[in-house]
Length: 370
Image (cartoon, rainbow, N blue to C red):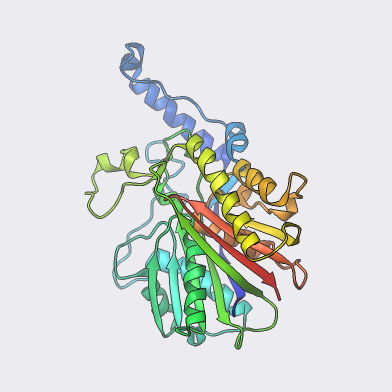
């Protein structure tokens, strides 16, 4: 049996409120409309619209977000985070925040890095193709065994948990770290009214171990399930085949894009069906599911899914929300919710970690409090 022994969290020092973000965005809009005044008057260019803190909160439930770098984001002439490029001899920024989250988890479980024999860095925003960030994390921690990266967008954490659990059950690892470093601010189009507010940065870590060595407490991993279904409704086309030019930065196709209404309509029933079927197949009555730790993308989506799974009278504590202060942190979101809202469950209680996102992809992890 595999057990979640501990989780870790890294939260950046910098935070950006909706009002700060809107002030910069609206100044950009004013500058753009003034610059293209004649073309707008002639109908050749569409005028941009202001955003507002009220619009953002109503559309998403987000009030603020943490970012690794605030510099540049609030400058209407830049509108992107500015981070100094590091040399090959320095730790990469993604590995650095991954290590901080991993160390937090190890400390909570009273483990050393030498106890780890498998590391998977599972996230949606890898900063390079190779060498693997996971192998860099392995080296920085001083762990042994093997390591690799994986990307299933916002579902990366749950797919990573399944990968680690399968390795433990197969006997190829006894103590595994799943790490989810997400610098989502790097792929946000801060000039797009419909998406400039969605993402924030964070890193999480999950320590998963064989029951024979896991410390007391924690959560038994009852079962894992993953599904994928191809869709273009959430996409980012930037990659190593692109050439970085000033035009690339301004090309919305090379940043996060989505068809929000279609995503809402298609993903919510898919996720609810996944959880309901997964729970039923494990012969667990719905009323025994005490907590849903859902992907933190949108408050309205989470409430609809929770209502379908837990019933219309579910308590908001049963499906905790952290996106109001963290925003959407991609794969890290459901793990932040678990990290902050799992200690209060009683022995024998069931809960489900579920993430969903581009692909489409969705992962469900049924847990039982030990």
